[in-house]
Amino acid sequence: WITDKLGSQGTVCGGGRYDGLIEQLGGKPAPAVGFGMGIERMLLLLEEVGAIPAAPAPDVYAIVPDPADMPRLLPALEALRESGVAVQMHAGGGSFKSQFKKADASGARFALVFGADELARGEVAVKPLRDGGDQVNRPLSAVASWAAELLPA
Image (cartoon, rainbow, N blue to C red):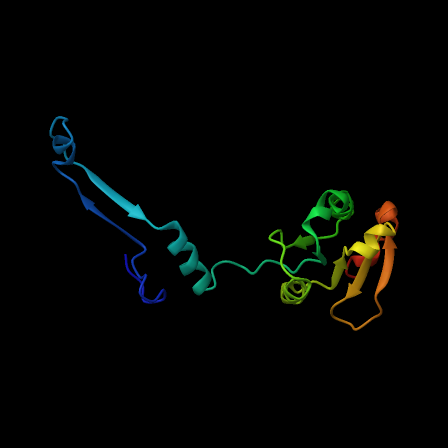
């Protein structure tokens, strides 16, 4: 099966009869059929035709300038998730600027900035990305007390 929606990678699946294949491999002659399908191409095609709904935007996007700080902040992210906050984070690191671009592109309402200064104080900076509100710092030790602020009204 071929589509024109994927450019030069248009073959999604194909197959046919393979009579004689078993005999060629040392077995007894037998009629056979087979097929192959490119799962990645199928997913691309489903996305192209709109058959896969878009994932909802996260409530917050975690920005972690120093990957070495991950063990210190993961409990806070887990506590947020347990409180119903949808958290997204780019696990591949990257510059502060590139992580902020990813946070904005994610559609998240807030960026949680786990910078060295904030972590030294036991805090996280909560920066609104959509309404232009003021950035505030919140204690990492009491995530449950302020997690509801991050949920949509």
